[in-house]
Length: 356
Image 1: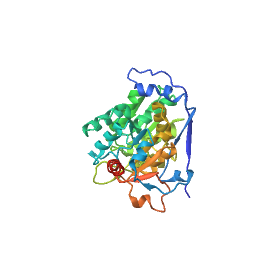
Image 2 (image 1 turned 120 degrees about the horizontal axis):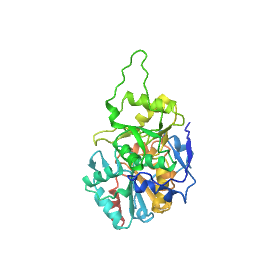
Image 3 (image 1 turned 90 degrees about the vertical axis):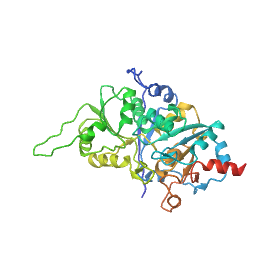
Image 4 (image 1 turned 30 degrees about the horizontal axis):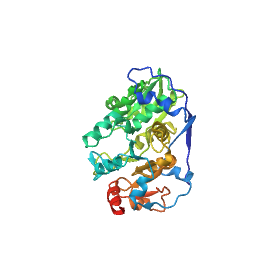
């Protein structure tokens, strides 16, 4: 039987940023969220466990009239991996599609669960691929982790242990938080010998787990000790994605595999700040001052991208250029149905032309 669980956290007024290096985007979170939110829900999902909490939906319709969908919303939120690119290869027709949407006055936002890069680093990736995207249009789960800690007034005298890569470290630094771990712990090993006791920092107040190509047993044990033995230590996951696109040749084990290791050792559920959690959707909606009904979420994953849009009350479009096949979408075992589906976002161009 499908089940779901939602973890709610009250959001308190943010204190002024104490670090001169703090990001203006993060330090203005109070201004953005306070007028609108007294509480936000940060939810997580494993496969389609949250689907049972949604109102029953009709089967997804194949997108046939692109103009109708484009004209019905003000903003398009795009996932990146499997929608804009695969690995370091741009998906066909993306530049022309984005240019067309901008020419029609649509706001474009790019949201990714991949935490390996900061927003600034993702900006450089877009530029390398020939896409003109502003940093403020990019929202990665690395940023979401730092934003969440700021939104709950995470004490600046506490530390964050990071199981993840450079993107999380850079966003924590911009937010003014102390951290340890990250890629530097990738070379550390444990010599298991009689009487050996592994020490850990008792001042760690949160463990943030994201995708980590330098994942090892040292990190598992260190994070486990912090979560189990440090009173009130938070267990935060950037996402629970099963697979990711490191190359365009195949799928690779995703951040959910790292999160799963800590879940197994601590027996605690993580608080997920990336998709399908509503945290980023609430942030985006209030930052840009737009109604969620005027947003279309475009993604390639049912259990993250499409649920992210549905949980936020947005229109949803599934593209089959990433991890989800038409067979999976139409399977009787799949309970998550987007409003529309199509092969790739470049279909906006051909379908638009066909209806003119």
